[in-house]
Length: 318
Image 1 (spheres, helix red, strand yellow):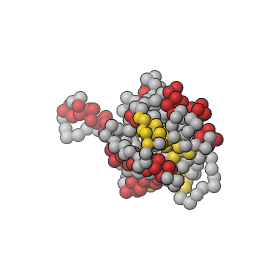
Image 2 (cartoon, one colour; image 1 turned 120 degrees about the horizontal axis):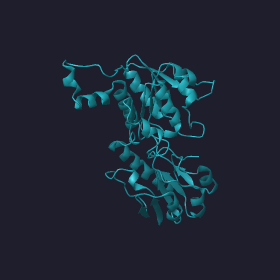
Image 3 (cartoon, one colour; image 1 turned 135 degrees about the vertical axis):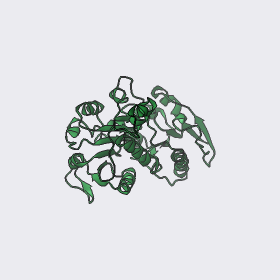
Image 4 (cartoon, one colour; image 1 turned 60 degrees about the vertical axis):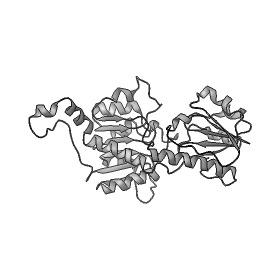
């Protein structure tokens, strides 16, 4: 009988239905798993499911029955892929489940910030409308998306979906090439040029050693149009101290982030220091978390396991 161990079921919403795999199995579910608990919990597993619980080389070394790590997410940076490959452990992930929810959240942040929705809401609550003594007031800046330029860093499934929505708003869309590359693919614009020309910049690339800190002090210095920076990708894509300094210097007009470098962020982190600013919105890594998207993720997760055990694996990584 196949033993399946789910290390962190609480990373999926309680209302999400996790269908039992269609083969004889034993499913062991843990709400959460600390890093120091992983090795013991996967020791006798044939299949491990994890979202954010890390599976590193030391844990893999003692998991002699392990055949598959099914990641309940697209990002696989929680897995030591080299160690898994060395032990002939397959790794699969979830793909294309968030093609609506992440782009929608991206534009929710973009619109709220460009139109100063939250400051105006707070000012109404505090009675400023009555104090204005007329039908409206102009305390906070409002800018249209139509006619502005959107720079997209990471032009995969999600980046392309964001681009289509942007075009419907009447925005000019620039898809950035890789940082430092001059041999651009058709439709791409040089990375530095995207930074210089964009009114809004949005990040949708995976977190890898090459993309960590892809937006730092140098990049903020190139942003001639004081763009709005949106990050619904990974926190490590942006140097958070440089982000705080860029806001202080007025190099960008605002920031809408759904991710931080380390989650949850430390209470004294740069992200928490800027979170209460009027031109900043920080949400708790929920861009992916529409009801529809989480259920699609759960369904694909079980299908990935079933297909692997049937000898027809999909979404293999590494």
